[in-house]
Length: 277
Length: 274
Image 1 (cartoon, each protein chain N blue to C red):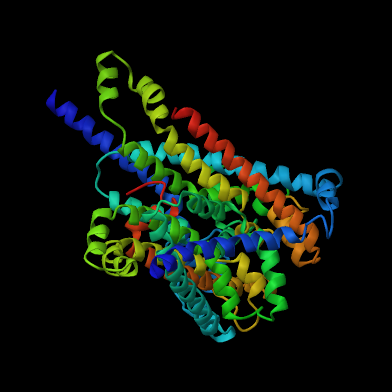
Image 2 (image 1 turned 90 degrees about the vertical axis):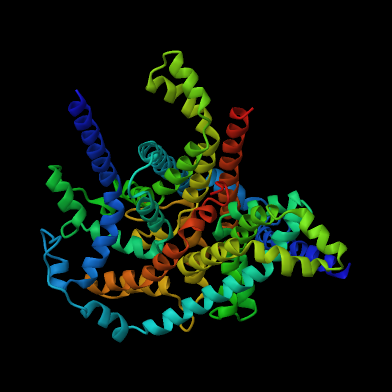
């Protein structure tokens, strides 16, 4: 009897892990396939039936990405834009979120939410006309400003809930002791919400890094970011799968690594603060 | 006091900046310039736009429905203590943050009709090969599958968080009253989960309606316009034909669609949480 129930428990555990593996398999497989394709020589990358485990490893794809294309320039562009967008977003978004949380400006919060709902392409047309008339197409400034529209609402929205958790008594006590509002923000509120700042900063960086729609129109020859560069590789070059997969791996690897470092907070940001972790 | 003003001015300036953007967008379609002719055209005259609207909605419904079913199923499965929970969450996050362009590229290679691994896997299971994004019959579903791959984990994570916050008492009461686990699921878990689920579906619906990257990279709206959603049609009108006014009116229409979907879902949420 006892042995029977132990066995049943073992079976149900095994069944659970089998099901879990089945559900997670597609997630793992796509990344695995991307990585292995990038390491395969061309003949094996397009072999049919494909080889899953045994294949010869080559770095030719990666070498080609860097020698045939100015990939360092594209990486630098992506870094500049994503970093600029994140820093500017935090500089504007943190005080905004603080004041919305502290003085309960609900209407402003709703506007941020609407900014999240508006399709990006609805901004793109006016921006394109605007930046073209200023001759700012193909500048970092235009890219950073446009990417803000993706990052800023997330920074503000998520940080509102972080700032709301800062006890108001603490701020009031500091004010009575002669601290200014800016001082309260800088010396008391900000240190308390440091985890939130890190999380939203990372998310803003990731979204800017991944952005395709704004960059495809507003980035030119000199400021082209990685997603656009990789997209152009499919449209104009003869398709070499090893090279394509290497490029895909290179652009998505940094965000995956960054995401792993801050995974606890990323869920909060992705769900726009709908779920408090 | 000056500093208070500064802190308050920031969001107001931001608001002004935002409204400026909206004003720019609508200035192109302002009656003084173009009149409502564009709207008349897209609503009445343009069959291609109507098809794009239907396609956008269908893509969203298919993708979000699949994500919800799978996501809730996975959340129910994973809602327990087990070895490897952290690993599960890590794996769930990766598709969501991965660069869509890169993912689209990998799927392009996997979907290749003769050399792709997708058809190989299909043949291993014993089905006849598909033409994925290369056939106008399957292309939209092939794209929806990419969306499902990327975003099912989001629904799962939100549902898991919802499950974690459920109270224990109703279950104990139901158990005492002799309810089966299935009855408990339909009559307790699902109603209590509804707010969290609606939030999850809301986020997914908003973003699925706006899907651009993967469609643009993988099919560009083809084959034979089979995957031309509003976003794609609008993008081509604006940046291939530079038909800005017309494209702007579509942008407003797309916004109305997303807004409408959001309002409906918010209303559903209100009505179920009293």
